[in-house]
Image 1 (spheres, rainbow, N blue to C red):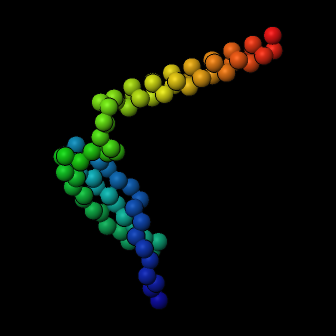
Image 2 (cartoon, one colour; image 1 turned 45 degrees about the vertical axis):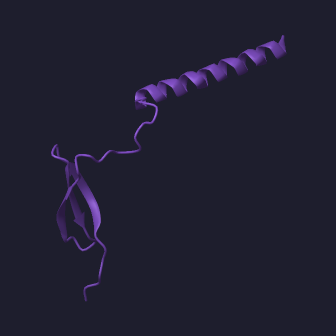
Image 3 (cartoon, rainbow, N blue to C red; image 1 turned 90 degrees about the vertical axis):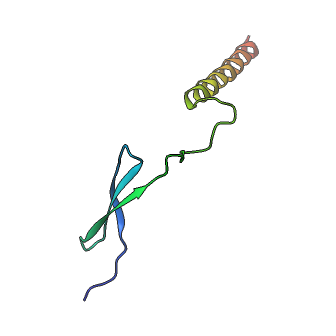
Length: 81
C-alpha cells in the first residue's frame, strides 16, 4: 500500500542568471528538481523611499539607541547624586 505524501523542498541553489534550482523530496524518498526563473526587475523587500541603504539604516538606528542609552544612564547618575 502506497500512501500519498507531500513533497518538501530540501535544498536550493541560486544561479547568477536569476534562476533558482530547487530540489523537492517526499517521505518515500522520491523527488524532483524545479528550475525557477526570476525576472531581472525583481527586488527583495521594499524599495527605499529615503534612498538609504540597509547599512545606513542600521547605523542610524544603532546611533539612536546609543543616544537613548546614554540619556537614560545620565539621568540615573543624576538621580543617585
